[in-house]
Image 1 (cartoon, one colour):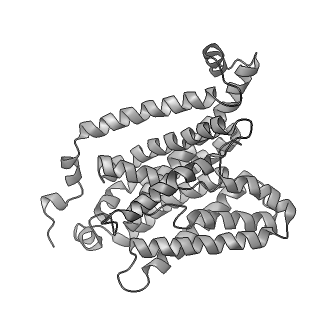
Image 2: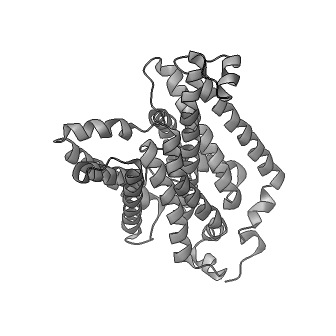
Image 3: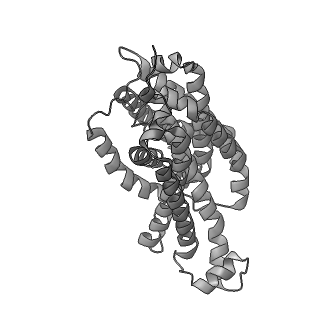
Length: 346
């Protein structure tokens, strides 16, 4: 089969001018800067400009300056986790050719959660590094299981079958989590705050711990961008263009799972960031993953950090975790995607 000019992965560049993508990149970079400033400024104690500048410079002479110092790692963690989830969602949607793909919807978060719970309850897991490894293994097993189940039967892994398999898997794994924790009150207390999903416990030591994993996942995802462009044309077309379809899927999925597992281990199972951000970026700026992946990283950072700021502002003295805010935003968006026509594949 010979691909026409419009069927090539690079043909999307002709429909979406590079200047538009460069403008989007600049706008998102500015948005990242604005939400970062808002994150260290607003909270139970709002910080004035003078204290903000002094606090960012390392001063802690006043309560406001100390608040800035405390919020800095929280802000950095929000940006990193949001970027990781945005890229993970973009990769998973590309691997499955499914616009409904998301770590939450496909059961990947639930798999990571169950693995962490098993480690806590039966193996005395307590270190953040242990959380990361367990979460990544659980996320990988859940992803493989959902894709295998969704591929059974006529038509292979369709978006609807994957979404149903992911939803069923999430429910089953969540039930197992509850069954393990109910007789273990002390472990339940440890797990409860993590399960909600948020970046309030961010510290520089935790950030240093996950940076190598996030870096590795991002590099793998970026290197898989051209292969994901080929997969977007369909397996037969991708193979005709010389792509090893199975290897491309496995390598790209590895990058997404590493990003999702590391982010989930540190911040908890935060949903819908990986669904909303890549979908919006793709609708506006096209399907070229060489642009989609970095733009999704910036968009995810903006969404999660912004959600964390909103949770602090509307919750008063009792903060609303960012995972709850993203669910409030993402659930209606998910319904809208499902109701759209031609949602069968990307």
